[in-house]
Amino acid sequence: MTWMNISPKDLKQVVVFQHCTDDDLHLILKNSITRSLEEGSFFFMQGDEAEYLYVLTSGQVKLMQSNPNGQQVNLRTIYPWQMFGALGAVRSDGAPYPASAQTLEDSTALATPSLFLRSMLETRPYLSFDLMNLMTSYIQEMQARYRELATERVEQRVANALVRLAGQAGIKSEKEAGIELSFSRQDVAEMTGTTLYTVSRLLSDWERKGILKTGRERIRILKPHDLVRIADGLA
Amino acid sequence: MTWMNISPKDLKQVVVFQHCTDDDLHLILKNSITRSLEEGSFFFMQGDEAEYLYVLTSGQVKLMQSNPNGQQVNLRTIYPWQMFGALGAVRSDGAPYPASAQTLEDSTALATPSLFLRSMLETRPYLSFDLMNLMTSYIQEMQARYRELATERVEQRVANALVRLAGQAGIKSEKEAGIELSFSRQDVAEMTGTTLYTVSRLLSDWERKGILKTGRERIRILKPHDLVRIADGLA
DNA sequence: ACCCGTCTTTGCGCCAGCGCAAATAAGTGA
DNA sequence: TCACTTATTTGCGCTGGCGCAAAGACGGGT
Image 1 (cartoon, each protein chain N blue to C red):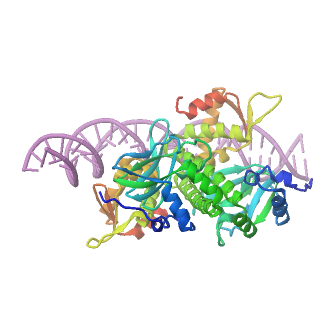
Image 2 (cartoon, rainbow over the protein chains, first blue to last red):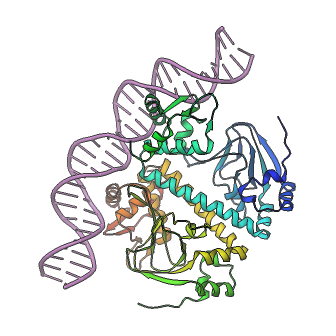
Image 3 (cartoon, chains in turn purple, red, orange, brown):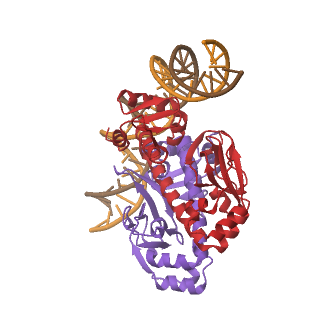
């Protein structure tokens, strides 16, 4: 494993830390620890007391929420230099995390104690401000997804999810045409509130139509525009 | 119409203003205007440029979002001394409101210009902080509702909505037993991502079972506990 | 009291999407 | 290379919930 020291400069990539002074960044680093986990393990589970705010430095993490019966939904996938666990860590008392954070591959994160975080927030106004701005964008996204789930058909929601994923997690490979995504049918199902069977059937259908190519935990989008049309209910 | 001057003391009831000094509250009042609208009109529409942050002083307002085809979902109902329009107003440039705000009855609201609001946020750290805390609670609620919509059946979602509404909008009347709600079948449908027909059928069913009594735009909950059981999927 | 607009109910037919089950494909480690 | 695990596909049957349509029920206004 390559061990990497995190520099203040690295931390500047974190949206919420963009206005921090170098001193602040040093202070944050000094008060934080790094945690490395292998694929499949959890940084925290829904309901755990929120002891840390995390910043992912490498790997990939899935945020999900389960209902009492164990069925779960994917709320979001975290990529390097994005924050997670903030919802729990910011709330004053020993608040619980409202979701679970599971690694999708071997991952490392910077863990900042909630207590220290809150002391920073009290004395660094721009931190609250930037965090608030991040929160507003999350709310908007959740509201949009909520509306989508309530009003759109499965086909549209899955197409939409693929388009969104292509934007944030897509890789344009050299030798192959199209945009490559690494998600299982189950992953996509949990993101769109449907089942792995239905996702499989839709993908097979779209593959037959030449819109994409599928593989094990792989989806290569060939005609993004056609997906957008499906997402908009025009097809 | 009874015209009421709003005092700083009144404004203290607004969660986000709870730590404001009296001077701050005065300043806010001086820079704001009041808008009164009759039932059915809009404080703003989804997509409008967010010129104001609103605080409802009387009446009731419905926040909703529509998709391109005009289908809509209810995001939240606003009661006096709650804020709305914050999502749009806080974002720096000429950002649009992400939802529409329609009055459910004659209503009055204090309208604070976004520009002034943002200048306050920059110089009053506790405002950002409190606003951020409000945002975190919204996110948690939206995440929970999203999960509910994705994993629970209609029956459970409707039962859940009634329970929640009983908590925030329910009125325990003197002469009649039970908790009284004033929502149409259509309203409940839009809150739970279903149709007015299905809601009607469910309510009729529950009325037959004696769990509640229904009327035109009226639902009187007699056995809240039974609804909770249904919401939990135990019935 | 009556009219009219709006809300509600309910029968009926339909179909999108679920989910089991069993076959198949694709990695993984020894 | 083989055995084993995990992901995917697809046939099949089923049903929850949608949505039209038509018939009430309610309530406000004149």
